[in-house]
Amino acid sequence: MQDNAVEVQTLPLKEPKQRRIWELDFLRGTCVLLMIWDHLMFDIVSIFGPEWASANDKFTNILEFANNYWDGGLREFFHPIIFCMFFVICGISCSLSRNNLVRGIQAVLFAYGITIVTSLLGDGMVIRFGVLHMLAFSIIFWCIIDFITRHNKVGTSALCFIVGIIIIIVNGLYIEFPPDEFKPGLEFLGSWYHTDNYSADYFPLLPNVGYVLLGASVGSFWYKDKKSLLPALDKYNWHKPVGIWGRLALWVYILHQPVIIFLLSIASYTIFTPGNFIFI
Image (cartoon, rainbow, N blue to C red; front, side, top):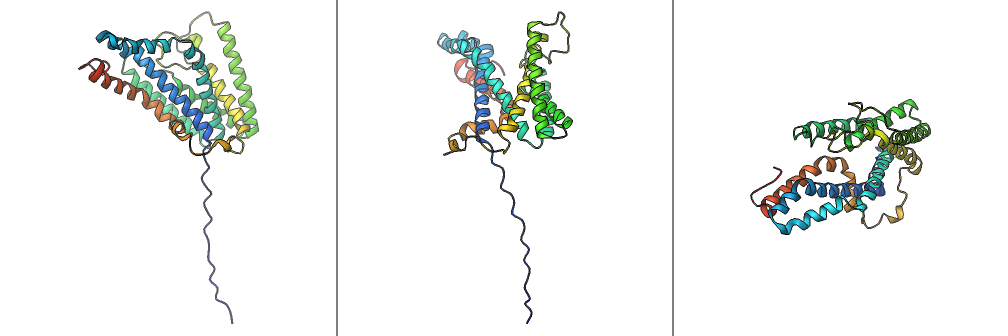
């Protein structure tokens, strides 16, 4: 007697979604939160604080606190370190992502959207080449390097390292021996071309692209398996309140200043300078 066995086809199981590397989100989130704090202090120093202090002497201490932070040695020391760390993390993300060209184009569109919007606020507020512009071009530059090496991971990593070092050295030479003449239109290249009011948020390509490329270079070795280097510390979700800011870094960068200014304007209208929004 012949068995009429029914062959059952099973669908292949979906591969589990790749877990995010928690320490990268945490470090990126830390940088983002410090950026928000930095810009909050700047807004108080340059926009709101003087009005608050002139309206009521008891608010002078807020302005003094913000001024002490802004001109203090602590900010002067840590500010470049935090941003360098942020740029290196962006480079590491390039070595992990599968769609860097899309990320780069998206960042370019957002960056110049910010330029258009801020240009409506006047010359002193326009962001012509800020941190997002620089990161957008850095990601696209990584894509060009990856294309040149034909997507060979070792080749891309090596070329990123070489180009990154060259960029940092060239930047150091230009700082030591700046050009004799200013060339308008080249401010985005390096700080030696920078002029007053060129960009409210200013991060030129040199040396910052170098830090991104070095991050991409070391990231391909440190995270070649795309797994956390510190899995033992990934317990109890202690890092998530900070890490979520790192995951949303692009949106936070785009939206944080309007939100800060809106909230400070409301505080001004209701508490510090009743009836006066100051900025709005």
